[in-house]
Length: 327
Image (tube, rainbow, N blue to C red):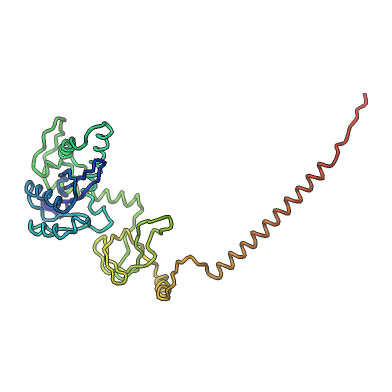
């Protein structure tokens, strides 16, 4: 929002679902005003997405940029052709990094809370989705301090609930943009402090490990085969291994210490895995000695238990002395 000159310049689109009824929700959120659009559909193919998006463009106009994830419906040639016909620039976020599409993800989180509440009350959420959108558009956003309707259309929507009166100095786009930028900066500081985050020191030419999906109990957190950083792009980087080049967030990478890079490469060229699970000679001899100590220790414990048992038998065979008392 810091670089936008007005609302509906950058929009975010994503798909939520499936729900138990088999429906999906296509969500579109304006990055500037936070104005949401939600459409219930049965299919999520490219034709359905483009038809829904075309309805929004005919209502609010054509944005400059549309942001989406790397879903198959957004990677299709039909969607790219649709964006070219309408004069929009399509920007796909970094793969496996949904935080980059956080505007619509945050809206989906609020929408799901409302849907769960309606489902608890045994109400059809599909009939009440439009009412939820009305109240969402009429509520001041915490990041901008204004309602999405006020920033997008220049007026507040009338609802049954009493509305707050805002001061005139905050009822303009520039004030909302500055407040949004400040709130995002405060949120970043709180999040970085909570997670003890540090600035990424990954540079071009570094060797890194990439976080991988957990397939079973034995899957490690990072792929043991290193990647090489070819280019930095903000908080993301293009990495390469062999002929394969991919784009990932630096938060999913871990830099390999310089002292281990040469050993790693030499062992990889020899065909040996530096983390194949085999023990070295010193480790094996040490473990053998520990087993020997453990065996001898067990023998001493068993011998002590036998000696203690013999003492109990001797005490049991002794007859207690009788004491007579003279009257």
